[in-house]
Amino acid sequence: MGARSLATQALAWARRQASVLKAVAFVTYKEWAAYRSHMLLSLVIGPAYFLAQYFIWNAVFSARSDVGGLGLEAMLGYYGVATLIYYLTMDFADWNLQMHIRVGSFLTFMLRPLSHRYFALSQKVGHRILGFFFELVPVWLILAIAFGMPLLPASWPWAVASIALGFLMVFFLNYSIGIAAFWMTRTDGLRSIFALFRDIMAGAVLPLSLFPLPVQKVLFFLPFQYATYVPTRVFLGSYELGGASFSLPAIVGCQAVAVLCMWLVSEILWRLGARKYTGVGA
Amino acid sequence: MSVGQIWSRALRSSLARRMAYRADLFLSVAVTLLSELVSPLVTLLIYGGSSGKGFPGWGMFEVLLVQSIFLMSRGVAFPLFMGLMYGVLDQVRSGHFELTLLRPRSPLLILVCQGLDPIGLTRLAGGIGLFAVSLSRLPAPSALGWLSFAALFAFSLLVLFSLALFMSGTLFMWVGNGRVYELLDVLLNFAQYPLSIFPRAFSLAVSVAVPIAAVAYVPAQALLGRLDLIGLLAVPASAAFFGLSLLFWEKMRTRYSGGGG
Image (cartoon, rainbow over all chains, first blue to last red; front, side, top):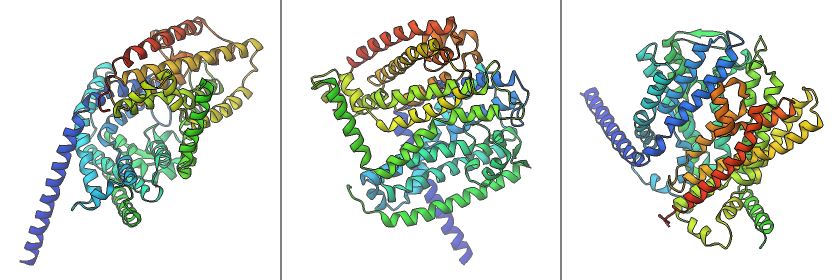
């Protein structure tokens, strides 16, 4: 009886959380749909960025057949998939949180019967659903038609799981940096420096396998690769870094553990930061 | 008040604003420098492999020279006038552009002065450092090479100013679109590599139609003593591009209707 009651309560809690997520995501979707023309710029920016990579790597591979263990097709595939995954995982949770803290409007979130982190995560869901339709699908079509690259996952279940975990990893990383505003108030510099290192160490700038072997070994133990490099490699169907190869289930398992650790880090930072908040300017 | 006085007051006020948050200022200085070194890092990693081969016909230090000139050009442009993009973005969105229009000076001059950002000079320092290292590993340029470089560097700045005018001009119509920065970045991405890696038609397009080749590639060619016709075409193209950008900006400015003021 006790166990059944507990299960009922857990189910009710999960339903409530799902309902909150759906409501916030829907409102965010509607809010950002007003700026869909801004989002449509991705149709130029994404393919133009890919075009630059296309020219660069075509030139490099005209003189050699292998760079960091990747051939031309694999290299372009990497950049194509990384571009698509970006549209599913990007967020600006760090900017949003620091802005609310700096101008004082964060106080209103402290008074709500809902964790701000969950609210921000739900917002991201709505924002990225919009990104799926207005960015990912059109850019996928452009890559398929203009570049002859119809990018499809090697294994749908593992790719979906890895992208979902990448989605959470990007969120927890960014949110943790946003929390720094409790101490620094203005965090533009910190956020920029973090974004730079995150993008380099996540494999968004170039595949991590291009780095020297000792650097790759260090990168393996940092959380950043789980944001871009791992989902991209899982999408492509193989994973190796620092001289080690992993099967898709093994690396997605590692990714899940890393996301859990990052959630814990954000939770600790949140508890420490919230104590500092004074609500000036609200 | 003279233009010089307006400029100097704007510079002091910009510095004072940034000094209010010193920790953030120091981090901004660091990130400004580091973020500009991403392309040279990619070049190093490409050339640093076991084969040491990179872009056909280009040595590593020649490519780094192009990228260092790109950094120097941005290092001058961003602190001095690229801030006008944010000025238009912010003022048109908030409606404060009316105040700029009411001032007894050209709105463009006011926006450029308001956008001064001395912190961006860090980029210039990074660019000069990379420029010195690259040049030290290449044959010394001739006097004519240096003279051509100086003249072409001015055109490089002209092209960046023109891009700022085009991008900010769109913001009078496309209110609050912060993604123009991404658009600018992706365009300038093509300016950081030798033209020979692009197909012929594309090279011609980035030399004549949107002359971003003039930002770094053409001045670098002058220093390397191998200016070609395509490089020379970029000079009149840059001047024409600037004229067009001024016309575009003025035309777009007249579309401002004060919404949100």
